Length: 405
Image 1 (tube, rainbow, N blue to C red):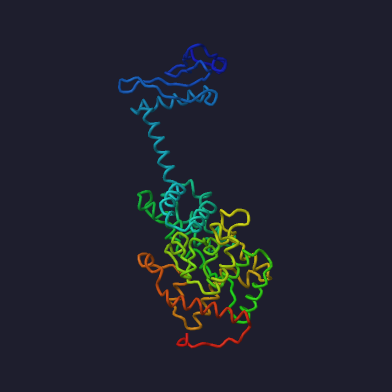
Image 2 (cartoon, rainbow, N blue to C red; image 1 turned 30 degrees about the vertical axis):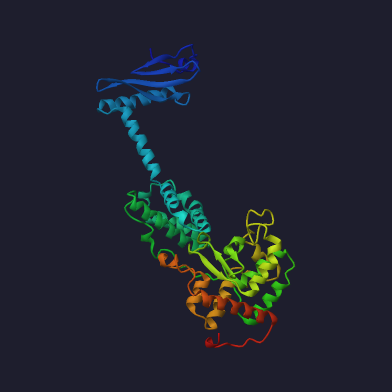
């Protein structure tokens, strides 16, 4: 006799598992712990098989009968319902492994070990914030150019055009990876060339007027905050490295005898070791700093814990405290300040570019050129420090011919 909802609901467990038949091979299996499982017995190719049809009450009697009837239709067409379910499950797993997010995370895992940590963090952050919520669950092979463009437009509409362009580039890399691994046939990001307005080049605020530089340096001398922060502030224009490189500087990287700071490759944007010749003025600051932080790892440790470097906002916050706005000068702006002046004074462009540690396109060459132009760079760095000293003192700036350097 077929089951009723009341029979199923009131079925009590016994000392052993028992079955309650409904018809057509469907039955409710009640185990001693009280679990109620729907099962369907059937025969295929002369062999007896059992198909799980869910658990009660999650799957009602009506639902279980519908699953039985669907399985019977497959049998009538010569299809094993058990194998059909396995194939469906495999298809779902395959599709899940080929979603945009799955492929993007695989691409990121393979490539990010070779990137600077900050660079890697920005890339995965863009994808997680601006792409995965809309395209993450989509099969990567099905994503069209208009779909991707809608995602990029959302970024553009909030005023982050440069981020939209970078996101398009990152997505293009993911699609190319999918093509190479056989999970997509085309790159829709490439079809969007020219779809976004061109982004305007952004430059970090800096000061290049000699009198204004002198006023800035005198203001920095008068900084009344932490002595460690003051040393970072004074060292920044002398070495003009990137702010992240300065705040993460370690005492083990400093060779006072050779007057050099050797920054390891993994800290550099170019992924190549970088040598910073230290002028006498920089060495003086380091000697002043050593009693304060020389017992630890970092030159400029966090005020909360010596296990981490100072915050990325510390130097900029100090400049703001001195009354300089972000439109006037930033920690990164010391690089442009040095570059502009050194180029104007006729120093070798190659030496300047090497000292700025601009990325070397030839990666093989980049691995070996950390000392390139080093003698000239050492002279240049000392001249730059002396030049800043003259500006600080408000002395007359006498233009120098390149041959006199």
